[in-house]
Amino acid sequence: MKITVFTGNQPRHIGLIHKLAAISDEVYAVQECSTLFTGIVQDSVYNKSPVMQKYFEHVSAAQHRLFGDVTFTPRNARTLSLQSGDVTRLMPELLQEAFQSDYYIVFGASYVRPPLVDRLIEKRAVNIHMGVSPYFRGSSCNFWAIHDGYPELVGATIHLLSRGLDSGDMLFHAFPTPAEYEPFDLGMKAVEVAHTALCMHIAQGTLYAREPVKQDRSLEIRYSRHSDFNDAMAEAYLEKLPDKKQIGNALANNQSKHLLLRPVYA
Image 1 (cartoon, rainbow, N blue to C red):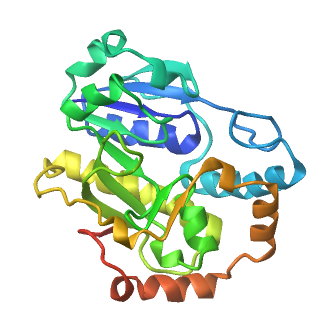
Image 2 (spheres, helix red, strand yellow; image 1 turned 135 degrees about the vertical axis):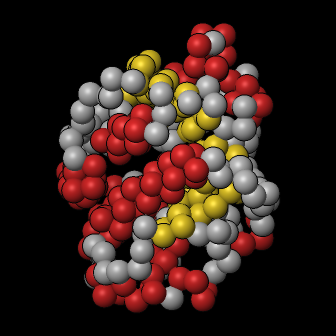
Image 3 (spheres, rainbow, N blue to C red; image 1 turned 180 degrees about the vertical axis):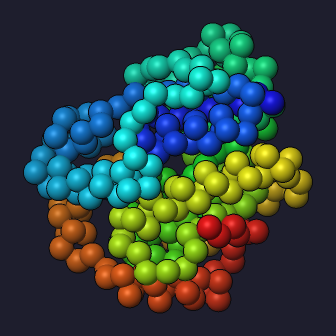
């Protein structure tokens, strides 16, 4: 079995490559690279500032606890490294070898535009959206779920790739097992669960076993953009972090509050 994945270069992205490599003969990994030192180094999305440095220190610490440090990819993974944003400009012909796979995954890549997205749609590519659609769509959805008072909606949606951002028909949701988590650990745990659930379905041959479900846009709580998360927002969030008990109580009541699709917990 061969798997092609479009992803990033952070430990959580490399972690997915390792998991996919463990269940397949060969992985083609197209990696878009960004700084490992967000807040310290200016990049195309986040400011270089003391508050961003402080915020992303929390993110990095949680990521390290769940995924470790950056590592080399496994021996059965072939990588193509690009600058962040370059995947949107790739022509499918440049990836001919990678389009001979059995499964196609998008996780943490920049917005994929035509003609590449159309080729991936033909291949029934799936996107790991770190957010629970249709409630939270766009950028940094799990941050906004906690910010808006919905920690029970910190999770992931595995859906078919489409031209619209996070709008494809859904296959299932994935969530951390209810427990008491620090906010940043909850977000990273959701990533780990999404990887585990996706790889389980691929290994069992059940990823496409059930009919995809269209998203009900009337249930949307927030559509967020990169520009919505700025220094002032990060600072305010850090000053009012929910405690572990609040989060634990919200997660325990998850199923009774919201319509979830074939949820996987881990």
